[in-house]
Amino acid sequence: MKILRLILAIIVVAISSYSLITDKTGAIIPYILFFLALMLLVTGITEFRENRKANALTLFIVTGFNFYVLFEILFN
Image 1 (cartoon, rainbow, N blue to C red):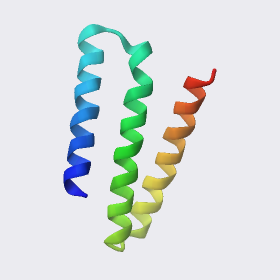
Image 2 (cartoon, rainbow, N blue to C red):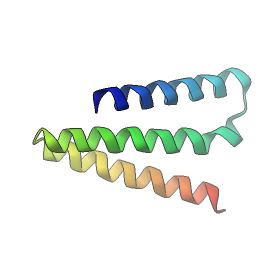
Image 3 (tube, rainbow, N blue to C red):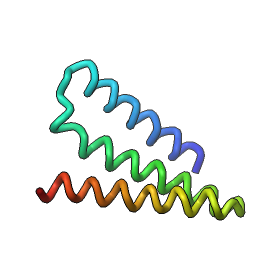
Image 4 (cartoon, rainbow, N blue to C red):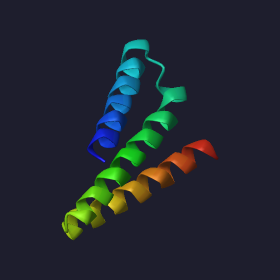
């Protein structure tokens, strides 16, 4: 799980950096949100397995909100 979380974090940072450098934020934001939500979900699962349920619950709520914003952007 640590490797998956690290890979997702690198993808988020790389896409965000590309967005800042090229100033193409409109088309790239859904990809950033998707990979960020996946990273938060993996982190929440890890926290839940380590019996840090308060942190896991917070991460799951943020993941749900992140997916909600992603779907609002995609379907509006």
